[in-house]
Length: 271
Length: 287
Image 1 (spheres, chains in turn blue, purple):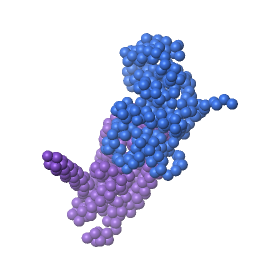
Image 2: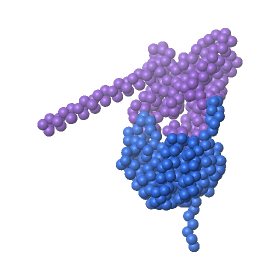
Image 3: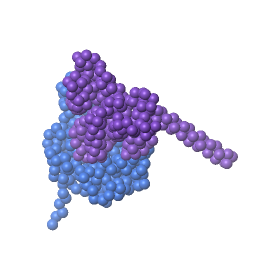
Image 4: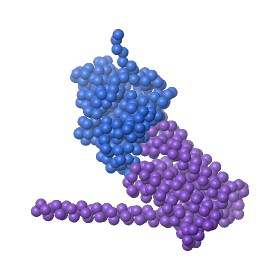
């Protein structure tokens, strides 16, 4: 009997456009995501690559129920995220590196405990200690969050995302502003979470080399989806990488130009 | 002296109500300070001033009318802020001035200031009636029970609203509820501290407690200790020295704040001195 992997995430014909706020003079809308369809199997580690402004954060915001006025359908573990917010309890989310108020009066344990939803399999202390161990911060539970370095604070946020034992982890460029050593530790941890803890991971990153080393699937996003498939297929094709790089450059130069769309269509034709 | 003070029933009422108010303001205040809404207490109390004027004019128990007006204003201003993207400080300014304006107009209609209205502006120990005390205790208990019940969610939205929303918390509903609770805390404090000084009871114990550099729960406990000490000390001092209680309470809390700042800088100087002496000693050993 053939082993069929369960689908963790299914996105069908997703489109999203930012509309100008009421009261502003601009009447034009900003199409950020255009007809995107893909699925992620349980146990996959999907690297989402694309330049700044490609729509990665918007995609995640739709998947996490932060944006609801999109076209299309998003199902996570077979639940429509717009209709059933309880599925969010199975998702751990780590946003782009954000600065934490140094004066915020909370210990590492208190911050990690925030991530504990309805699930109570063991004691609070045990769950927090286990999550901190996964991010290599054992023994720091009584430290105030403001006393940690930027990289350590980011790991605390990861522990917060892990403490509820999520089945799906969404990482939105979490290592953008940390040093190379911290980045490498983070990549090793992401790989271990995927392979040892069997957590499905969707990870947005600008670091193509890291995605090549860790992810088994890759999605190229630049408002439209240019490529979705096996990571080795993408990284072993010089042609795909070249077209991806060119389309990324185009976005920086002419974010709404037709030229950019042409590069996109050329790339998707190749896939 | 203390036993003598405790013999009077009005002082017993003031002390019991004062402790309840200090605890409630400290707990609510930490969330307000961390959410950059320190002046919200001021705005709520000024809205309540309009409500007190309505009560005095219509001969309805003023704390009831203040409660209704204050809660409605806080919910209205939250809705206005969310739907029109008015900056938070501007929204606070709108609520503050509109509450005061309504109050002044109504007082003019009633023929000017009365002693009762003045007591609401500046606070009073003598005028805390049994009815006031019951209301203060009920409001404080309600606020504290709800905050204890929703503690994790409230800390989460204070730390990061977006991440709280992603974890499945209904942030919008919780924001409305919290601002409603802050209104109740303000109304509970009106009799004792007065409209003009309430925000200091909300802010000062918390910024002092935050200087101790502890976690969330410990900061709340330190803030409660500072708040309760200020209120009890203020009540006793105002009775003994015949001073205005609201002002005395606030001056005492400011004294604790300044004392903490001073102690911290002395401790820092000692640490720096010790570390430089140690460096000198180790350099001497090397040479």
